[in-house]
Image (cartoon, rainbow, N blue to C red; front, side, top):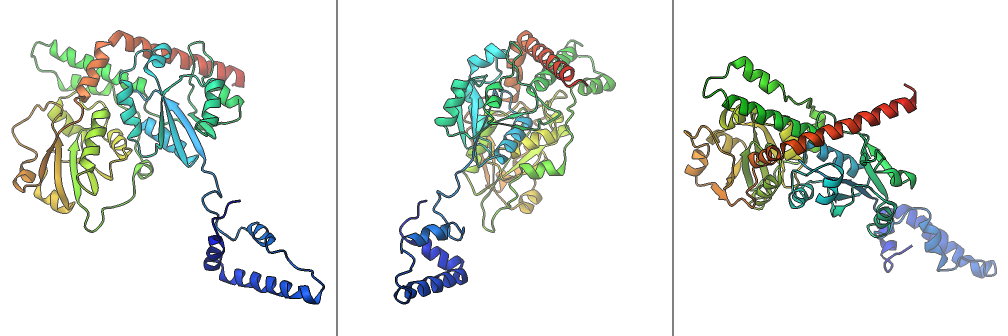
Length: 420
């Protein structure tokens, strides 16, 4: 047990003066008794050892080792379900290490990834619960990699959701971790998955193409509603989930509050980087997230892909974001700037195309001299992500079908084994 110098004694005096005083009196009496009882005393060096067992004194950092947990994944088309999984994983330890599966491993086991390693790394690193990232992690945790996790990265537990993660041969990707007794499970976030999002994008783009094939004829409202209904999310928002994702802290009395707004649809690496740049301009980053109706009005009826509360959670999970306005107005008003005490309004140079350009939503902050145009670090947009999926349409359809079949087979076998 390491104690630096004798500072632990003085910490004991400060925190437990009564107990410490009593021990000192006892020790003094025992010490004085040596001459009376013929040398029966307490050796000087033995006292600290026995006292430490009482748990009175504060140890220097070496007292309790921090628990390190590991969770891996492809994290392709990053969504709030991924973020919630990592939030739960972090709650099982003190430090969260995330393994990012390589592009090659994803191709071999699932099909082509939508986002590159660089883009997926930006998304994972940008999450508030992540402490460290291991790139090029294997899809299956072998005993060799498991030993590396335990010894090189000092991992205590491997974490995964309660949904199946199967290799092409149908075996469990986490069998080795379970066998070692170092596996912990978290609850999967219902209502969203990368497979589901790919399906939404394909459905949305297919509907868009069908509308264009009408040769300029007006689409009936009921047809438009059916189109939107074909890719409605199953997510049901709760105040508890929003609280779990929130920082829970407001701006300080003299904080420089930076405001940025947008749809933040299909939350991607470009969003993370621009939010990081915006946060560097002040002390508190407030993000306005446009409503579904506002996004549809200005981007087209087939947007957004992700709905308002889904997009809100993705933004809240970002480590650079302090607070969000759920359903913010398109136009920034003087009243809004005053209410939220906004110091500077920013907008990136790369943005989605807008259908209605008659009104400048930033006219008021520009007239007040508080508008700042930020150079966007990346040129990726929601539209370009959707185009990547459409360009590899057949590959992603096969990928989705393959995963669906694997999961169905897994649950059927599990049901058979359990005897249900």
